Length: 323
Ligand SMILES: Cc1cc2nc3c(=O)[nH]c(=O)nc-3n(C[C@H](O)[C@H](O)[C@H](O)COP(=O)(O)OP(=O)(O)OC[C@H]3O[C@@H](n4cnc5c(N)ncnc54)[C@H](O)[C@@H]3O)c2cc1C
Figure 1 (tube, rainbow, N blue to C red):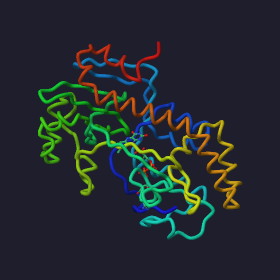
Figure 2: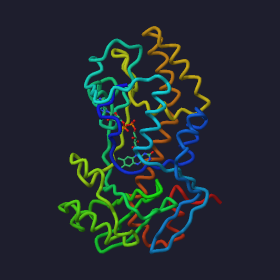
Figure 3: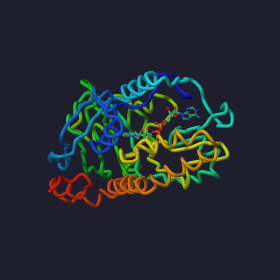
Figure 4: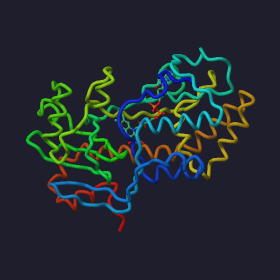
């Protein structure tokens, strides 16, 4: 495995997984699931805080961990499986790699491999509207907490959750008009944090520097982009992109991974096997992406829902409590 970064390099604070997301991992590999979740912070409900009133939403189980902890667990799993990770090894072109049965490009949303082989993968991207800044705070939000606050500039949203004994992620989201009106387009990192504290006053004063900004190479504020590929396999290079689609394979399809491995021995069979997995995953993958898009739409139009009372607001989300 080639990784351009050094071991232990990551950005940001914590990550959160819903139980539904983790259930795929549990079904596919129960032993790894136990190791993966062993040190996670867990809570069986979330809270939506609107007009200062916290409404608990039961039945929403979330599991949280630090980004660095997540990396360590994955690196240990590689070591156990005998996978050698070459850190500081950037791959610009799969043609640079030695001959292989299958090359899997899991190089993220800005994948260079996908760009280079764009005529095969046919990727398309959409950059979403809202702006995000990612902070960490010592205030511990035990349930995953969504905080909405109407300010003189517009609506400020915080996505916050405890992920270790000492720290919570504190992600601030605003629409671009609010962002401009609040002067965040020209704000320094310190001024952005001061705005977050002022506009979301239920947070402690201890919002720490955005880890994204601390890397020096990324701005404090970023936008989400979503990407799709028309195809996931380039037979000329024997290269497959978007492993995350496969990684979410439900248990009923686990056998197909073995089929891919068996099929790798000849190029023609390799292409057929990978296409088979791709076809079997297309509908499920589209459903995930549609659900993600609906969720992004909800946040991008939240200003129109602010008139709802604290109980009614969460009823319009996809995480509304089960009847
Ligand atoms: C602010 C923020 C918060 C998020 N929070 C959550 C969350 O709470 N829960 C959640 O499930 N998801 C979250 N996500 C989304 C999650 O981080 C991504 O969905 C996930 O990381 C995608 O995994 P990936 O393997 O496709 O890409 P990545 O995680 O980006 O991994 C790609 C890897 O490839 C390496 N690489 C890239 N190019 C090359 C190259 N040319 N040569 C060698 N190596 C290369 C990179 O260094 C990196 O290690 C969040 C994302 C952001 C930005």
